[in-house]
Every structure is written in C-alpha cells, then in structure tokens.
Image 1 (cartoon, rainbow, N blue to C red):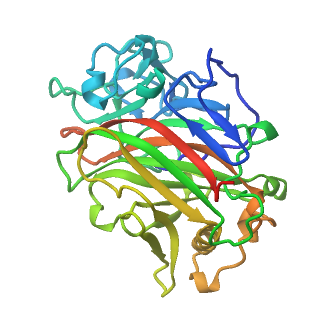
Image 2: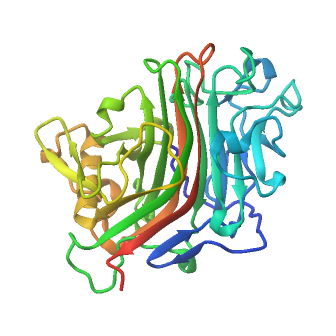
Length: 400
C-alpha cells in the first residue's frame, strides 16, 4: 500500500516536552528520544499533513464490531497490556502510556472496547530508545478467533484498492511551507556534478518477527520510506511529489523479484507515483527495467541488503540516490503515468513541475519506517512482522 501525504492546511499539533529531531537544509535526524511534535495515533486517519511524528494504522475493523463502512479517525487505545510488546518487537517499553493499538469505540461502532493485536510503542530513552511497530493479520495468537483489526477485505479500501493489506506506519511529516523546517536532500553547497550530488537515507532497524505461515498467499515486509516534494510545482497544478520505499525485511510472495524496482501510479492516491524495491548488497546499484529495452540505475546500497529472516541487534540500511539517478526515477515515473517506454517519455516537467531538474527545488516531505502485510487467507492463517527503529537520517551529500 502506498499512502501519499496530502499537501494542504496543517491540522492541530500535540507538542512534547523535549526535542530529539534536528531539521536543517541538509539533514533530518532522529535518534530515539521524544518526538518534537507527536500526533494522536489513529486508524484510518482522515487528515494528512500535521507536522511531527505519527503512528498510523491502515486496515479494516472486523465487521462484527459494527463500525460504519469506511469509517475514519478510529481510536488507537493506549496502555496496551494484552500483548507482549517486547517479545513482538524487541524494544523495551519505557512508558505504558506510549503504547497503542486499534480499538473499536461506541459510538460510532456497535461494539465498544474490542481490541486489535497490531500495536506500536515509543521508547524515549535516547540511546536505547526508538519506535516499534507490530503488524498482525489473521486469527489471534492465543486462539482461532479473529481480532478487531484486520486487513482490508477482498473489495479493498474506500478506493477499491489494497485488498488483503494491512499497514502500520511510524512517520515524520515536515512543515514544507516553513523555511526553518525545510530539508533539501540535493542541496550540498557548490556541488554541480549530478553523480556526486546525492541524498543518503539510512536507518538502524531490528526485526524480531517475520512470519508468513502461508507464503503462497502472503507477503510480509518492513521498509524505510520517504516522500519528496517539488513545492514550486504546487502552483502549477501537477503531481509534484513521489514516494519511495525500500525493503529492509521481506518474506513470502514476490521474494524472487525484489531486486527489480517497481514504479506505479497509485489510484488510491490520485495517481501519485511510488517507487518500491529491495536493497542490494553494499556498493551495488539497483537497476530498473521499463520492459521495453531501457535499463537505468535508481539507487545504490552502502550497508546491509534486504533481509529474509529476523536478526539480533540492529542493522544499518543505507540508500544513496544521486541527482542523476533521481532524474532516471522521474523519467521512469513520467513514462509509467503515460504508459509509454522510457525512450518515448516526455520531460519530467509534465508531471513534476518546471523546476523538476533543479536540485534545489526538491525537499523532504515525509520519512519513516512502515510495515505491510498482504494476507489473502487472513480468515484462517496468520502473517505478521514486528521490529523497531532506533535511528533514522536523511542527509544531503557530499557533507561540507
């Protein structure tokens, strides 16, 4: 599932007592402490762009809860005591009030207090802190009955997309309209060589559980994600942004194909473009093929590749994208939108603005780590993933 950030007016903010993120023209950094702004967790949120950190739950309540179809802004209950948060994610709990899980509330649901088994929590102890996600599909871990929170049914979400999918996000959203909160990932001073001018996106992650009990019908993954925006393009009425997701952990359906990046325009997000793909070995670039004879590099890995099983401790995943590679991505996206080979693609200006080939036009809009579980047989079989992120940075390179 791809969830693009809707660009518009900011929603209400919930400020915390301490800062741990730094945002500058050339860097966004998180290192496991209290978010500078934290927004109330929700399931199926209707809003889009309040700055700060968000925990977001995407999926569907069990029909037995009697919630309105396509209900939005559902309750995420704190003080999760019915699950083993540390056993599911590997991250200690520093404060029980900083744990959340989807729950039914009446009204508007008929059932009140029916809880989910998907959960998140925030550990704000700095060097040993981080944010944890656990995405559970299928029957409860304790018996064969269903839990409140499940994947979308075969009919999909309100847009008719994302059938059998459930997602959990830990995201930061930046105030793109505020110069003091603007991070430009291709803004290294004085660098004009587009092969050397590049963004670096790295995280330290842990995966405690990665399970597909019916791998022919399930796909389970944890992934690092970011959205880039050409703000000047907004006044031109074009798409102006794209999302990129890189798999840090992956099992189940499609495992054999993760070395091939995928580009698509998501109908659930108004046709906004997304790029997804696996992470190769350190020093190796991932190449995209348009299926018509054109193959171009999209990004390069500098640390760990995509993992297919849980691991102890944390691993560093780092993607670098040169501005030349980014131009390849924009060209592939333009061709995909128009359904033509890259050799026949229009200029990126068609969809991404008249300044799409200006390195200083692009800024970081959103970044984080998410989990996605596709489970076609969720009525009877389980698939789940749990892990945490202790550090996340997006940097403009070279550093000066």
